[in-house]
Image (cartoon, rainbow, N blue to C red; front, top):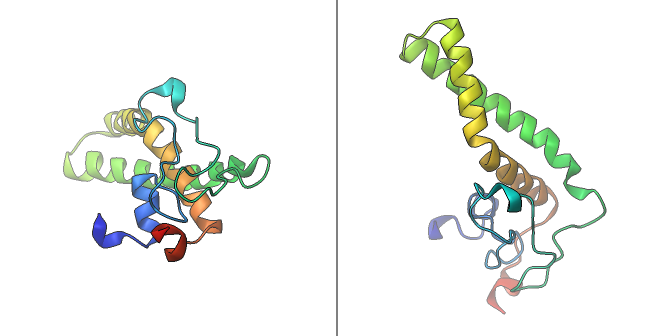
Length: 128
């Protein structure tokens, strides 16, 4: 992942601060600990960036989550229906199971994408 350092993709996939790419955004790194799924640090431990930029900031991540969920559902359908030759009912079941299993990851990635729309990497803050 060092190859991507300094890009938005690095912050999105590693859940690191979008400004410095060093501090963790979430209190618990494991998204499958569902009780702590949404708990974020208020500030970056390295550069001090406030993650919740304004009240209800992450409500916009719902729209990103919808798009990511649809993309994953379409991929699950294509794989199950065309490649695995499952019927419509089993393909539908495959979509439901896939989305249920990936839900915590979708939530986190959507929040990461949303904050990266508004915050850019700053090399100077990363080197401090």
